[in-house]
Image 1 (tube, helix red, strand yellow):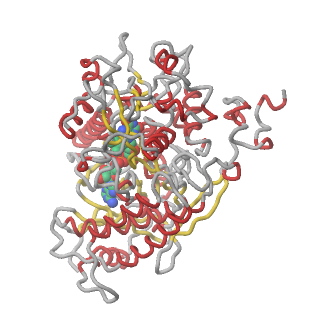
Image 2: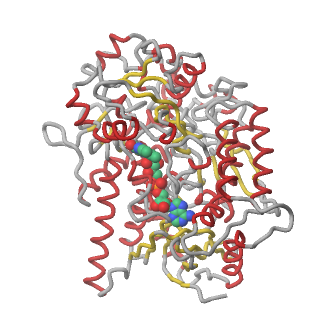
Image 3: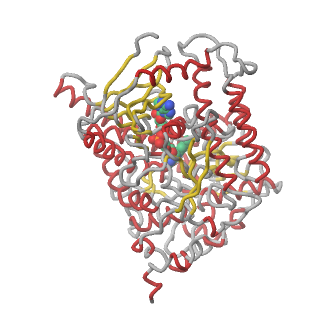
Amino acid sequence: MTEIERHAVDVVVIGAGGAGLRAAIEARARGMRTAVVCKSLFGKAHTVMAEGGIAAAMGNVNPHDNWQVHFRDTMRGGKFLNNWRMAELHAREAPDRVWELETYGALFDRTKDGRISQRNFGGHEYPRLAHVGDRTGLELIRSLQQQVVSLQQADFREFGDYEAGLRVFAECTVTDLLMDGGRVAGAFGYWRESGRFVVFEAPAVVLATGGIGKSFKVTSNSWEYTGDGHALALRAGARLINMEFVQFHPTGMVWPPSVKGILVTESVRGDGGVLRDAEGRRFMFDYVPEVFKDKYADNEAEADRWYTDPDHNRRPPELLPRDEVARAINAEVKAGRGSPHGGVFLDVSSRLPAAEIIRRLPSMHHQFRELADVDITREAMEVGPTCHYVMGGVEVDPDTAGSRVPGLFAAGEVAGGMHGSNRLGGNSLSDLLVFGRRAGVGAAAYVASLGQHKPAVAARDVDEAQRRALAPFGGSPADGPPENPYTLHVELQQVMNDLVGIIRRSDEMELAVKKLDELKRRARNVAVEGHRQYNPGWHLALDLANMLAVSECVARAALERTESRGGHTRDDFPQMDPEWRRALLGCELVADPAGEVRVSRHEQPLLRPDLLALFDLAELRKYFLDDELTGHPAWRA
Ligand code: FAD
């Protein structure tokens, strides 16, 4: 085998979205030599696509807001299945992370008196999303990158080398983690352009690889989101949790077919947009669930008054959490009341003056004009659910972001727990910064604790990683016809869309598990032509194994959970079931040749009494049993 490029660092961060960059900045600031590896161009990550904003209880627009209210909203949104310590840290630390971004050079939209402006979003009690028009993610990534550059300039001044402390490896895909006796020892990958291999020797790896949306046919996610970090973690021995919870954003474009799934930001509803059926009826009033009836209006007059007088009116039902709105749209379409192309209408044109729409929602205005020939200042958009976000991910310690595998950390969308069964809009960008920073701190502390006892990369593991990566070039497989990675991908997406999609049923998911098994078997025969220089077929062949592993986790966990909660809706078990109120499903890889996913059940610890006290006892009784609430102050009263 030819000589392989090698780099020895303290921390490797896989992913250069918000979580990865914030982790890298922190690790470098703590004196760690840090590498950031990303399979797309530097700056091209989901984070850059985020539109609506970043949730942080700064109280700039409504002074009643504070971390406790944000914590409550997050727990309600996740149907109390959230890792409550993560939700607590997130709510407490998000404002500092937003202010810190301005010290890196971000500039958010302002209120009239010059403070960071905040907008309404589904499930958030007060206007809470700091934003830059509908291009917030761009500003977030731009300012994090600016901070990376300024750290590199500082390194140049000190060491004469811009990359002495922090180096970016862009368009480089990590395919394997390298281990030493159960501890992380590094990572193995390839340059996408040349196909050449590269080894990172590092005692700590932070996974920040984002989501899994490309396993589904209709998705807002772009090509990179193939669950690589989830699969790397599984193969290294980590546990994934909550994989049954996949968020279908209620509003993706439905027409024309070439753009189906592209996101229509929730800011449209936050800024006054309403959902209507084919006859023009605002149908969301029919879908306010019992647990939310005291918070959401049941008539148009009150809902409309809320925009100007939120203290004396209940919120419009269009701003219910995403899972509720997505299910409602699905039900309307199924009942034959949908729009011509199989969605519903989202109308902002009759709610705001044209100039205001263009000022507040410039990207949406542009997106619909260019892609669908629709002027959203004059006509309604057609929208429907699209696979958007995965709540499930690597099980981590909330304070350090460490997984159960020594040296392996995870932050951002690839980590699980924070959002429970359903994420509130805007809570991802804040999650990235809060836990990205914590992962950087955790990884740096771990490396420092190792002293001289650092793990080492074994030559045979590098050979094995190389063999695995080259397998698709192997020619004719022994046990069946060669398989095309594109065909397998299309089939996988169809299976996930049709059988493990927004509404699920036992028989369909059993069929999905069978089909996934069969796809996994066929994927072993995947074969590509040509050579390693920029070969998209080869790249997809490698990604496919990851998508199959995470899809199996989603399908098996979804089959197991016999209730409906958040981003997991079952036709055959339509209610939330108290039996599952604290149950977490963990996915691990069984170390047999088939690499099958095993699902096991674990119990979420009880909420700390001071956190219980933030809720009314009556509300908690909708979710928990009496003997779990004895720590609540009203219990003794
Ligand atoms: P990402 O930003 O997804 O970055 C992942 C990184 O990992 C990329 O650099 C990628 O190249 C890299 N990577 C992946 N696999 C590998 C590999 N094998 N090797 C090397 N590198 C790899 N959330 C909000 O809070 N507010 C919003 O307004 C909002 N709007 C959104 C709009 C859209 C269209 C979408 C798709 C999402 C939106 N979200 C929003 C969700 C949010 O943007 C994402 O959840 C979040 O950005 C994920 O960030 P991350 O840092 O975890 O990963």
